[in-house]
Amino acid sequence: MNVGVNLEQSAFLFPDRPAVSEGRVQLTYAQLNDRVNRVATALIEMGIHPGDHIAITYPNSIDWITCYFGVLKIGAVAVTLAAAFSGDELRNLIAHARPRIVFSDATKLADLEALKKEGKIEKIACTGGDIDIRELIKIGSPSFKAVERDRTDTAVILYTGGTTGVPKGVMITHEHVIFSSQSIAYYEHSNQYDRALCFLPFNHVFGQFHIMNSTIFSAGCVEMLPTLDVDRILKLFEEDRITKFFSVPTVYVRLLTITDLKEKLGKLRYCFSAGASMAMEIVKQWKEVTGITIAESYGMTEGMPITFNHFHPEKHVIGSVGQPVNLVEVQIRDASGTMLEQGKEGEICIRGRNVMKGYLDNPEATSAAFWDGGWLRTGDIGVMDEDGYVYIVDRLKDLIITGGENVSPREVEELLYTRPEVQECAVIGLPDKEWGERVTAIIVPKAGCDIASDEVKLFLKTRLSPFKVPKEYIVVSELPKSAAGKILKREIRRQFAEK
Image (cartoon, rainbow, N blue to C red; front, side, top):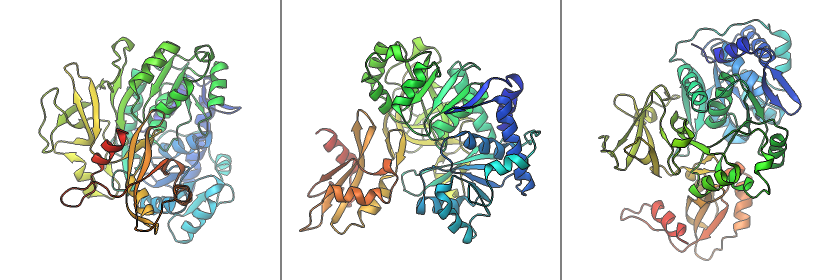
């Protein structure tokens, strides 16, 4: 079993169908498979073996997909890192994953050269590095078949910050990726004539599994944008380039402000939202304006997909994340792990082929993530109704999801505490119609000090990815605490959400 077979099968069945599109460049499945095979065989010539880790830090591009499937086809493990990572963020993840080669663009060359000098990596694959992807394509062979791997072998490692602020490498098996690709293609009625737009980063489970892998499996075309560009999206719609649109709630909110939106959508037949809670009102407005239902699902890096809303549009329930996908079990459990009665709120727990293998080199976190019997604890509070529809009530975790991106409050708090004027702080997510949640810093200043929010924001911008920087700074005299002195974030969220 090998994820690379998904590409090979689509190339066999539809060699002349478009597979990937980036700006003015488009490759058919035969052409893409040729490029992938060349990279795969070149990597073998360089001494890469099954199980070796290879990191990819490109922005979304044809090169990203080429490297990804080239790595997977030879049985190596693709470590997919955010293109936005640099400095300590990048160094720490590279040191943890220990990839032999890193594929990147030239913007990270200085960071990667420093890591190479420290012995953290062997080769840098980018312009100006040890070898460039185009050189690999030149020296590789166009003929290659994906090597056989066990279904439980790790195919991909994605990083998630979780609630501790310490990134964890989520090990995803070949079976997991293939299962998720097939499930999503089924629930979305995907086919070889679809063109799926993706501006969401491929290092994220949404972009990599839900959009890219499922589209390749169903032999559709992945239409890529490097970043969100509403004007470019509308142009692609009007050119009849897009049949499937995937986004986060904030983008749907922005699109709804556009005059005569329905007339601009071209051949769009399907819309999907994930990454953050979608306001029921936005789903209703979108349906009224465009005539298209926004499908939703529930999933996480450690387990995806879990539910889908819905294969049959007439059974779509606004406010729910849908019913469990085929072959995935969902239970609601209490804090002791006991299964609760239908209609009771508790932690959502799942079991199936969509569940991670574990966290890389972190047996303690892996053990804590599971109940006996292979049941993954999602950390989310939910409830299931009599028809099997799941509703998310709250998170057990403090993780903030803003615009589809995960933000660890602790990471931001640690930096705020380095400021001389900050006595205490708490970073929380407050409800936001556009972003799902807006990152908000609640700060208690030291005696005699003032908090200059513009100055604090500039300080954080030089140390964090843009989406992690708080959008709002609230100064208070004290933070609510428990009898043991623990800051009560739930109480903070309640207080400020009401204002």
